[in-house]
Image (cartoon, rainbow, N blue to C red; front, top):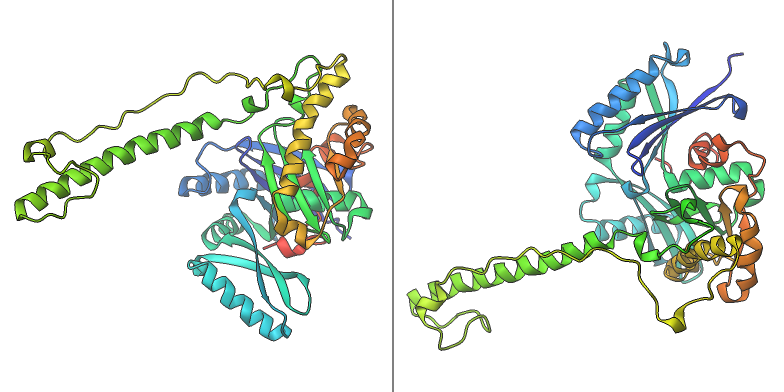
Amino acid sequence: MAQVFSTVISIRLHDKSVRFYSAVGGDKASIQMESKPLKSRPFTDEFYREFAKLLAEYSTTKVSFAGKAAKVTLIVPDSTVLMDSVNIPGVSRRSADNLTTVAVEARYRNLSELRYNKYVSASNRQYSTVNLVLIRQKLLQALFTCCSSNNMFANVLTFESNAVVDGAMALNGKLKNGTFVLLDIKETYSRICYVVHGTTVGCYDLPFGFGILQDNKLVAENMLFDHTVAELAVVNAKEKAKAKQLTMAGGDNVLDAAEGTENATEGAFDAEMSFEETTAAPRVAQIKTLPKKTPRVLPKYMQRPTPETAEGYVYENFRIFVKWTLEFIAGNPRLRDMGAVDTVFVNMPQQYDYLYDMVNLEKQENGVTFQRLGLDKEKDIVARHLELYGGLYAVQYNTHNNF
């Protein structure tokens, strides 16, 4: 009997690449991974042509792809899907389906462009909570077409946060159907997943990973986020809006004067302003720049004691992950209403295991316990690429989030 050859294809925006992850018959020892760079802007026509070319190059190197189309699992970035929920009255199942359709159509006017899955996450006598997972039809169809044109059949498409939870449950059976938060810390980025009864219902990405766990200095949190770009965008948008407002107001005033009306824009010009003044050159938006970014210094009363050991420095830096995880939990009451969590499972290198005892000394304040995911005996190709390994089990776990 021929062995089953499984392939996972992941489109990654963190490092602009496509990764191919394959195994024979679920054997971990047979796992192989290849990474190919992406040059085009994601999900454009040029991207799909480049993606199809990468698939063609990969399929020609695999004997298992010869002849009959091979089944593959596609993993797309979290940003390509939307997770939402609607509440409907507690009625019969048939009526619930109709009410859900009406609620979704009312909320998403472009529903014809979307494909969505729905499932009941909580219910009582008064109402039911229906979870939704939506993705654009055009994106879905384009990716499926790329696969089919290269002798591949994409029988499952899911997103990264869903796949990483699949991998965790496949490796740790105690998590199956559980309610918890999964913190997957990689070297340069991290992922927070909220799981209720074995299904991913929320996620959030952090643009930093265990690379910040330095043992000789404290990392400035504000240096980990590129807020400068957002701040500049807001400042310059305000400048352009002011310039446009004055230009439009001046134009209106000229027309009103010519027609002998008094409908000039209120507050834009003084009542005694002459006609010559209104026809002056419009204000030009001044593009502003921000000063060079520097580490933020907190007031002394807000500062924690300076660490005296290497482990102390690492722990203070790890508290940044703790903070963002707790904020994610506290800032999403909708997720907490579906299921309260008391444990955060962390996937990061074994060398940092001593941090769990340190952070759990603050358990009463945090409200949750931080525990290792328990992948110490797994190879790096499994533990460090949990979302790729989870793609091998996408048809077994967390299937509400598959397309």
